Image 1 (cartoon, rainbow, N blue to C red):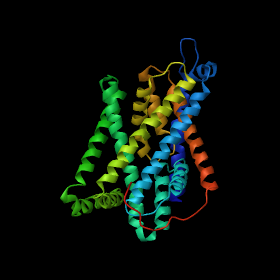
Image 2: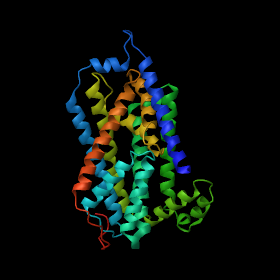
Image 3: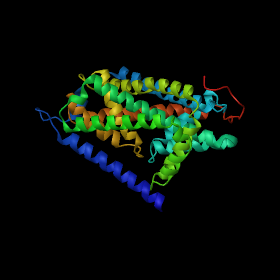
Image 4: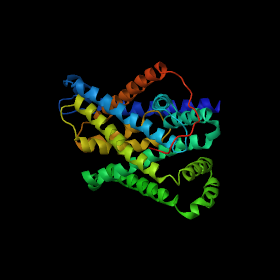
Length: 333
């Protein structure tokens, strides 16, 4: 019953967010009395940019699967490229479920742990570190792009709020990353202290143990961080392609990469949809776009993600289902 109520409340929250966004978009009109849906209907579409958006997202998620494979092979877990892509696409599909990004990661961790029972801790740690690297590089890219585009100097309250939020997450991420290399961290004092924190202490202690396992594999961590940069650039480029496919005049590609990294902070929220659309809808008018344009572009971005996941599931079921073996492999390369 508790699980049912949790899922029901998540659906209710998602429906409330989208209800508000659609109502806001439908009631906002221009000088000619047209809302964003009328404008979208009358605008000519450039469909080839939607195709480009699909392949940009496919490129981005493919790099995340390669990154995860590197992290697995650090501890000698054999994982073919095919298996990494199959499980990666399976996790991506589950990310569209009500539990959001947490659900996909949890299932990947369970599947890898079941297939590698002798390396269960390392398998689960790889999923934790994979997500942590993705978030940290997203924070850093967001900070650099905010500084580059001058978004931090915008006087609007929304712009200032998200600027300081991205800066705070970046500082916290870099500080936490630096702490794991300190001798104090390795002695377990911090792990025991985090474990005592109410509500999130158990999850925090698991993350600490995952970090400790990768503490001495700096080369693989650096490689994984570098390969994450084109991931966030490609996602932002995909958002730009969708916008330019639907509207004649949109912010530049760099602005869209920045907007995506800022709005994607909501990926930490365990909801399948809603928060990303809400944030992008708040940011888009700051770039000169009509009210409702952010909702439409973000929905098309999510639809493109679904298409990528569906294409991945076709690959998942068409490939042979061979189990991962436990043979030793050389470290990340």
